Amino acid sequence: METNAIVFAMDNLVISETSVGLLTDGSYEIKVESYVLSGGVTYNLGEDKVGVTVDNTAPIAVQNFEVKNNQVAPIGGSVVMTWSLNDTDTSLDSYIVGWEALDEDGLIVSGFREVKGTENSLTVEGLVNGYNYSFAIVAVDMAGNFSPESEGVGLVVADIMGPNPVTTLPAAINLKNFPSIDFQIISNEPLNSDKIEVQIKDDGGNNYGPVITLDQIIGIDEDGNEVLTDVYEASSFPNFLKVEGDFTFNFTAIDLAENETETSIKVKVDTLAPSYLTNLKKTMLPNGVKFSWDPLADGQKVNIYKNDMLIAAVGGYFFDDTDLIKGQNYTYSFVVVDENGNGSVPVGAIVNLDNAVSNQNNSAVIAAAAVSAPVLTTEAPVITSSTSEKKDEVKGDQSSKEIAGNKDENKDDSLKDDSSKVGTIILIIFLAALTYLYYRKRLEFAENTKAAVKPKTAGASAKPKNGNSKKK
Image (tube, rainbow, N blue to C red; front, side, top):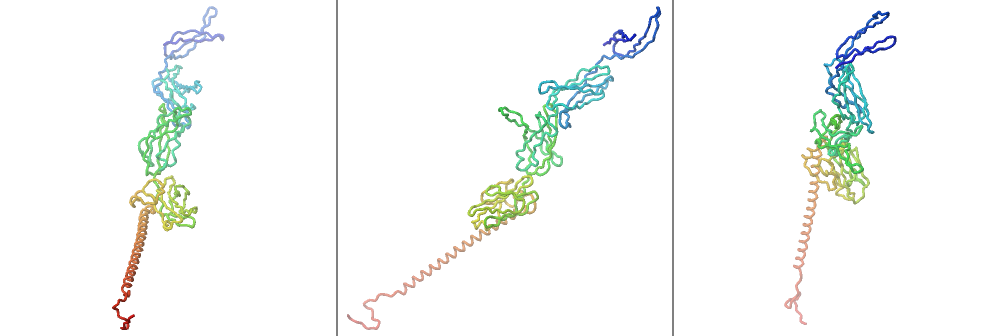
């Protein structure tokens, strides 16, 4: 390629232009001489030289141009661009990066930045979250030649998920809520992610279970149309049953343009049921009942149910109920609840102000002892598990471990009381039978004696008592 060189000269404030000719790329020295003609004689007034570099070759297009979301941007709206430097082009002067997008009204919003030719990255802020941006870059040499545009990067979505896209996990996962946990995804702008993965780690940093994929829930709008919601449901979930400790949920959200955002949440997991109430006792009052039990562990309370209705939550070790009506049966259940909401197996008691047999027994009995969550019952208290089974299920202090033994002792006492009652009844029946036989024998003896001493009627041959006979 050639360049037409032009030399400018000034004479008496008049600029004159003279064509030098076509020059190819390269370095040139142009000499300008000044002459004046006077009286037919030419006089040389002097000369000047100037160096000229002719460069009509544009740089090559920028290679490996990439645009990604800026993951550390506090409110999104930022991207990071990178490209490869051209080490062979010593004339490279700068790079110009431009971008554009359509706003909500369909108008073009655009911008550009210029960086030095020695730079190979650029961070741009102030973009609008949710807009689809196209980016391009050109190289500029010292002669002002522009390279062809790089292969454009289009439809790059600014970071729309924000620094903490997941916020609605419960503070503690317990027996009640872990089977139905879902994830609420919160973002500064409408979420544009088709894939969210969760990796759970224990307090030692080890992976707990496989990676979980969250499925986006489909909702229905007011017109009956299906719409994507911000609620994601776990397709699978680790088995947190009988687990206790601190776990970290690491979330990776990938939008439709393959931009990633990572965040994590720490959650306490406690799905161990507390030990059931130990040494429950009842003392009858004139118009009610007083219950007492062994002290609870720190952070625990007792939920008290009467006829399946919650009537109190007690943190101490006794409770009075003076609102009873004579002649009615009342079934009580006592459930120990720990600080994370887990409930123990219920312990039950039956009260009737007019039932002497029930009220004589001041020790309540376990209503159910072989379940892992509170199950209230209105049936009569029945012991349903052996001592060894209960010890395997119970966690807690020594008093908790001893309850199975106390249960067997109560059972033995109950059997002893029943045996004593049966023995008394048999003794009474036996004495009644002896008394009946005794009086029966006395009656038969009296009848036999009376028959033996009865006088006979006198006949004609009978002699008079004084030995004399008389005729009429």
